[in-house]
Length: 307
Image (cartoon, rainbow, N blue to C red; front, top):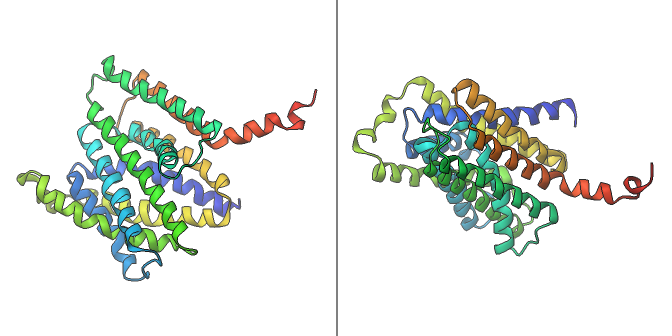
């Protein structure tokens, strides 16, 4: 990678890592559904007027918007509100890799490689550690709850479902403009989030967004323009110029930034069980991303040759 591409990759890691802190700030003055509507409204307005609709069947745009927008961020925002720290959320969202593999196996009949199987086992052990955190009563602060954990995992599963939809959309056409696809799919969540807000938000909180301070609107702008438009454009550009296996490992830095920011900016704490779960989930991601290369190396004649 050139210095410019390396800087772009590191910028995306920092932007997406700080994403969770921005969500926490915004949720102080917005309900989860109000934040969902505001995020996508801010993200889509500048671009939808300039970018043509993608040359793909509308059902893929609709499904992607529902899974990635309403599903992923709906569950995530509610999780952060009812009992989930920004630090831990940044790690749990990475389990989408394993949900994607499970959905691919069931729906697309994709075979799971040995490194992926090992990664799934490590991830399952990591989730067991997160469950033990509640069983053992380690988190006395109440910052994380069982409901928050479950909702966060639902968000990761919705992200995985959107990955499957994106894959099917790419298979349905020879040339898919991914930027146009994401921009027009971002139109989909705005109305459902607004309807959910009017239906489920308490009457006293229904219009609280009108009194939100500038700092919360700045967080919304960060989520919509920086974390969605800028970061996605940088990431897509990297994937166009470099092989996916050169770009994907940078995503391992997102939970590192998320953990650090949550602890330093928000003063969040991590229990021993949670640290154990985090270590196992990160080990699972490393196993999936680098397992095949390690297996190939140790099976190669160079590695097998006597020293």
